[in-house]
Image 1 (cartoon, rainbow, N blue to C red):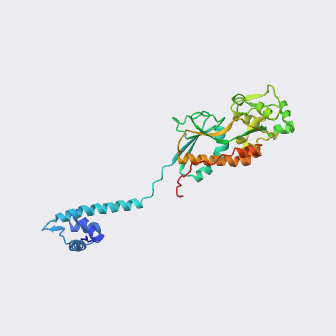
Image 2 (cartoon, rainbow, N blue to C red):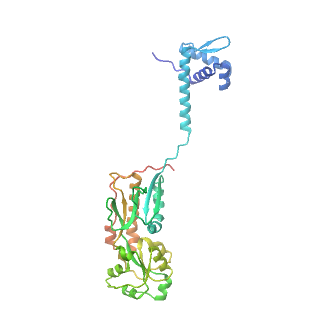
Image 3 (cartoon, one colour):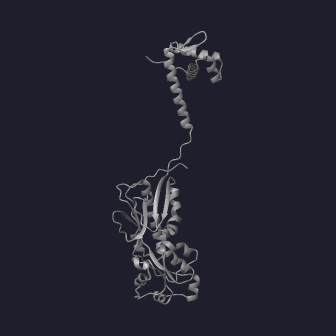
Length: 337
């Protein structure tokens, strides 16, 4: 037996009358006349073939059937109101996925940060936090998801991916080059004021003058000159005209483009260290971490094929160092703009 479906207006009138136990108060709430409420209740009772109210001299009382229907209708209207409120409410902003990347300060300021807007435009829902620090992240207590380090690639207990190699070459201030004249061979630099990165002389990175001269085929003994640390101060000293320094191609692009520094010779030497991505071993990376890895390796590949070659990196080496695409599929949902 099918149950008749009363009009919603009749049910609203009934619910208000049942809640107030008064046709007059129900009419005032709904903005209609008492006669309109009475007429809708009567139509409802006829449709259902049930008496919903007992009309007494000075009171209106729900019957058992009326009480049951009043409870059901009140619940239904409440759920309708909640549904309307839900669909009318603006969507709550999605909590961002946070990505913390530990990077050496020089690499962060000179290479990574100028490119980072490309990642943020592509994945606006990922909140990137760059932690510029010299220490090596432990990836356990510090909340770091990914590290970019300049080293030999040996990181026991961690996953290590090659990002890109680098080269070093001599740089000096334009004024110093004008005063000293042009250079034609690497050996001529042995008679110049050389600026040394004190740390690079002992860490085996291949960013020191002895390594550069060896790559140029020149034997060198004890090299005199000012020893400076950290490496950023070596470059600043060169820009101030204190001597000739060795600069890493990845870190010196802006200084050359702006004319603060120039290259007295075109010879370059490949560094022993390279840039590596490091993270905790995982069967499957979080999608936002994998997305950043793919993005930064693509940026490195573009740099190797353009600025890397211009800096003196051999074409064969640049091509061989291009990162392979990540095997893991990357899917990071994007917010509607």
